[in-house]
Image (cartoon, rainbow, N blue to C red; front, top):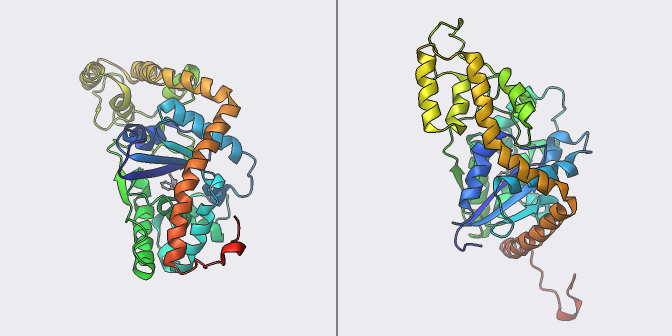
Length: 340
Ligand code: TRP
């Protein structure tokens, strides 16, 4: 593992990853592996904040996420890949941080009210859901992370993490570096309906999708709303379809499609087939690698177990510093030391 600055990030265990997760975060994580000491974790406890009513899929989802990561190029030899619930220090630090976090800070996080509005079919008036960003802060601080590579949607969470960090350090000494967000320089990834790609909107293309599934989704894609007839000129700059060319097509194809679209030489129906071909070609090697990884459940579990042991070493070191800073480090008489 590379030395120097520590990078930490994670995905919630809510299901398979899609192109938005890939281009918005995971692709960047892959590239960071050789530059930093990278910790990437599956946030299975975070999945509970919204899925507490039906927990039956969380454990499976954790393995699905790991299979997606490995297929995308995260490497357990170069990065620490681990599972949140296997490192109980996350819960300990979460508890301690919760004591110093004002309620008003949490109620002000924009995604808090937004999610309560959007996910109407779930009761999110729980203690755990309000505390989501405190747990996220614990995830980050436990590894004394310098950088947190995430999508723009996490900006307000990161801002809050930095505020909690300053508050802790001011009271208890400089235990933590202030974690900096490392935003992914990615064009925003639309879903097939033109809204942001999101699992909960049902508009996502998953890394694990088969060629047939990809083609069917491409045929249902929204296109340029101002191009009503085949003979109308199109506008690639604003067309949802073209956004997918920007992600996966070669410069030659992008140039040709843009030109022919503006001249009404290629129709949207043909372009949907073309973008399907490009997406299938792009995702095919990822899907094949994924199938191989997903077939060996025992190996996936072993990767998480080994990574979590490594993660715990750093977590334990951090917690010793936290307890010392908070004066919770009792000096036990030698022979009665607890837990040894
Ligand atoms: N909230 C993040 C998301 O929804 C997932 C997450 C949990 C996370 N803990 C984190 C990301 C710590 C970065 C660091 O994508």
